[in-house]
Length: 381
Length: 192
Image (tube, rainbow over all chains, first blue to last red; front, side, top):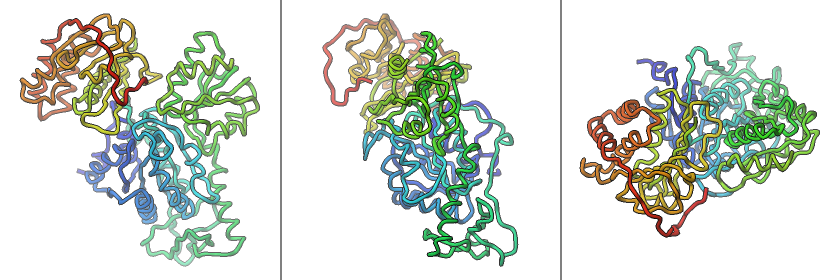
């Protein structure tokens, strides 16, 4: 039986978010998983350990999260699609190497199923405290893409999207899920596989002598795998187009600018968001993840009370979807940012909004009930 | 129409598995459904709960604040989650293990000695399936045939045992009376 036949078949399922993420990764072509178990992301590693061998692909349980992300980088350098999944403390451990993946331009996917923090926190309870860490957690100047699903279906769809984006731009992409979306079972519709877009990294096919692994000719250099017979050199040190360490300021400028601009220049096509009732809204709730589900219910109830309230659900958190928020803020009187933390996403919203911005913060480790968001809305209108 | 159903018990009773099966059967029947498992750091013997939402419209908010229907498989579950039941909601209990009401005021109480029945089949592990049978009979919502089909699909190697357990649950559920008892504070009690 070929591998293709063993992928999750098209159809309607009732599935856990974490499992849907695994099946999506397999459909996207993920061939390597390295991870270290941590609640609430465990089901991803567990299911991967079962599914990868069935498909003749590779699963490794590593000694810790640092080993996991480094192994993922290695697999990506060898030319395969690779991912890992973790939560809270494990995500912190991965930070240094996420920067390495950005520097070496190794496509990979990191799933962070956020739990209540800080530190060990409450492993089985939800949090959304990693919004800033996902973007700024590694040192130095780089850009990456962060997607945030709010349902099992979105977890599936955005995992595929994460692989596509990472392959297209040669960057690490983070799927910032949360405990509820990860553990929750929900309806999942898997489309026909040939209707699912799959992107693979651009490969270099020219003459060996002319190959420059970090060419600045385009924003995303063409890839060759380690072992393909080309001369490649990879280092976390600032490097020139050949990949060799360089102390030249010009090399540094060109490299860092390219690492940043390949995301910034493509930001518009990376922004994913959904709007609800915003056409005549005085107050707009900006939110993501499981909080978006509470907020949508709250907005519906507010509408039934005659309050002019709308909502923007962000599926892409980074690069931050500046334009839709700015435009919405030119018509609304106030923006409310709902999140399960003491205020993180509110900062980029404030940076671009032209109206007052306030937070609806729910730090307790549970998803906020709709009443909680509704109280915030009532206070704002 | 939307039904909020909370299953409560302790880890090892199959509370979360029961919730998953109920949700899957609902989706098969054309409903939208979500199931949110919750448990503490310890699994077996610890706090365990499954929140199942079944709706004939797409579910916006997939979680439960005040369930319409509460299914309780242990006294611990009653102490922790009894208070969450909607005023006048429906309660289904393993009435051998749950012997009183704690801060809840249901309009109707159904009971089945699920653990006892499971023991009589030689496998305590099927208590949750007995409970699902009782649920199918006393509460409804999902077609019992669909529910049984889903159970058998989930455990294909133990089809006969589970079919019996489900059947006995349907046959033995009945309306019962429970008196309010004084709440006992247990460690890790959450007002969610």
